[in-house]
Length: 224
Image 1 (cartoon, rainbow, N blue to C red):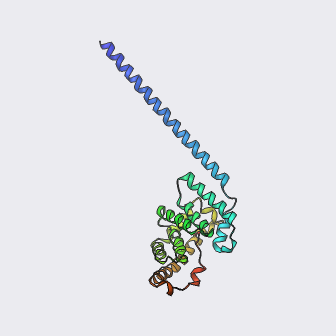
Image 2: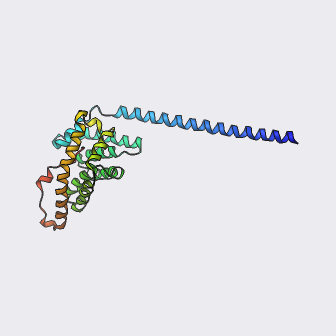
Image 3: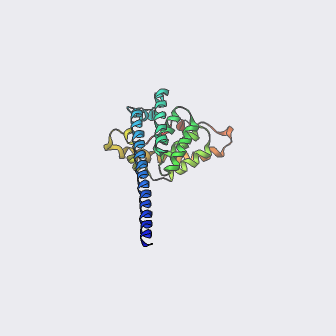
C-alpha cells in the first residue's frame, strides 16, 4: 500500500514537471517570436525611413516650399511608425504638421489632439492646433488650445524633443539643440498669450464684425 502511494506521488510529480516544462517552452516560444516580430518591424521602418528630414524643417519656415509628393512620403512613414509602435506622440505631432501643409486641417487637428492626449506637457501639441482653429475661424477652440499651451513648462519641450527618436534627426547641429528649442518656445509663449486673448475677443464678436488678422495669417504650425 505504501509503495503504491509513493508511486502515485512520483507519477503526480512527474506529470507536474511535464506541465511546467511545457509552459516554460511555450513562454520561450512567445518571447522569441515577439522579439522576431519587433526586429522585423524595426527593419521595415529602417527601409521606409526618408533619407533626410530637412524638408520638414524648411517648410515649417517657408510654406511656399510645398511639395505634395514629399509630404505624402513623410505621412506614409509616420503612419507606419504608429502602426508598428501602437501610436507615438512624436509621430502624431509630425503627422499633424504634414497634414496641415497638405491642407487637410481636420486630420491635422486630430493628429495633434492624439499627440496632446499622450504628452499634454508639450507646448506645440496645443499651440499648433490652436493656430489651425484660429485660421479656420473657430476662435473658441483656438483660445482653449492656446490656454493649454500656456499651462505647459517650456523646459518640458526641450526634454521631450531631446528624448524623441523622431525629433532629434530634425536638428542637425546637436550642440545648439536645446538653445534653439527653448528660445523658440519662449518666443512662441509671448505670441500665444496675445493669440489667446485675441481668440476670445474674436469669439465674442458677431461674424459680420470679425476682420482678418494679417499677423496671424503669416503664422504656421511649428515642429519646435
